[in-house]
Image (cartoon, rainbow, N blue to C red):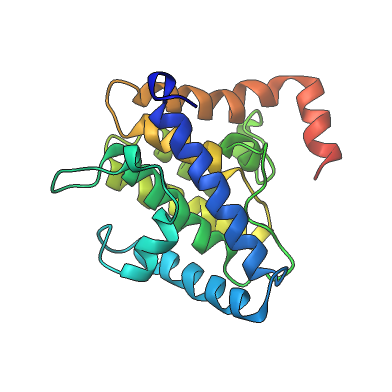
Length: 212
């Protein structure tokens, strides 16, 4: 990726994909015992970071931004759009992975809407009245970052209970889009398409069922 073609959105997605993979490997003990212990501490710090401002905890900050492309780092008094997307997605990943020794929360290729379809059937009128779909609807119609984080945190807890993973690189890219009013509707459209429009196609439903 050259300077002239650098995409912050792509950079955010790649960074989160890499960090989630590294943390999972450490947590599942594929490295040394010291790496496993460090990964567990970092995941705990990431979970706790969801309730405070970015940068409050040095350990969480390192877990989020270790090895980051400097072009994604903000310069003002508030987190940049990229920093928000990275911090939020990795904080959610830390929550999602909690207690799942045999489970990998980060599942490349599974967008948020596809993960939702494993909890509920958005094309079913009865399921649309269930708490899962009400929470998803509230997420999609959120108008602030704070509101979005509150609703998506509830969904992540449900995914964790059901041992349903998702692609955190994709989620980070979605959060990057949501963080700007100019691109917020792009994220909403992707979430709705993945959860609702694609669920109405017989081939997609069969695919989801075969992978459940």
